[in-house]
Image 1 (cartoon, rainbow, N blue to C red):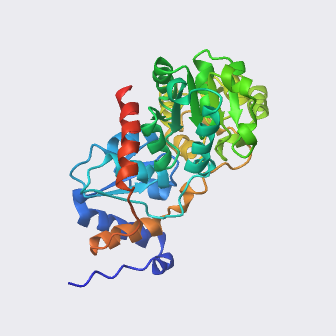
Image 2 (cartoon, rainbow, N blue to C red):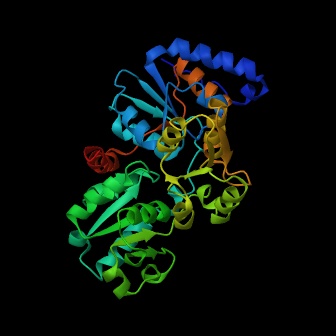
Image 3 (tube, rainbow, N blue to C red):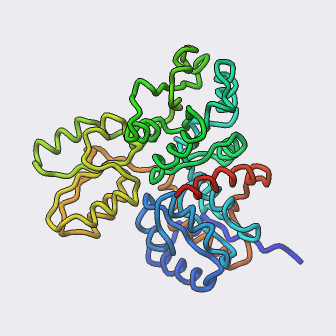
Length: 365
């Protein structure tokens, strides 16, 4: 039996928006419940509208494990999200990423060799296995989640980082947190841990740029990583809004810098930001520090509230933006034709270790 010939992508770019949307709807109808589309809040609107379920990384991670009847999990997000879907879904299910170029610059700032090197270096100063819990942000590759699983650690999201850190500190006295320094710093600070008890590990420098004494005294060892979108927000942006709009509520994502988060009125994940704005009274004024697609969606959804984007320049997740209607249509129509494009498959050994870390996270919620 010959394998089906893949449907090419390029001709789809010649279609009108209306024609593409019609073909996506037709393919979705044909596939029925055999395919579930998950869409992250940062996804562009023309793709987001076709998601069966939407959410932040935590919500979508749960959904990936709760759709056993779907043969295909098509993830409109970025690569690490599709990996999580593959890890948490059943062996018979296939996770798909419409565009393999949809990655995450933050996730790329920590790789397994660098983290293993850091672990060994820290181990020359203290007993890491008994004193340090590794915690990786969900915005990381599967092998880093596997590293945490193998070393008694876990995963966190921006929704549950404080709960996960509390869990970690119940087990060991220190945490190695990667790859996002800002989420780690902001979450630890909200738990009452002082900045003096946090140090920054710089993987390009010998011993992370730290002295042995700094490592011994640290309660949290933060990785030198960040989100290229959220680092664009500055304290001056908040000051400007407060000057021109007295009474405005400022809400930001914890991937923003410590200084920005300290000046904000609210701090939360994409789910928590949306909840705060939706529950606010009509006529309230908001300036939001997170990705532009989400802010524009809230503005459209709630015209009774005055909603502004915190940064004066465009801050958009360019890698998430790579998934367009052409790639979505291409992935769906190939499934209809019996061909799977861009399957995401985590090696079994890595998946088993990563699942241990993810299960630990899910157990503390």
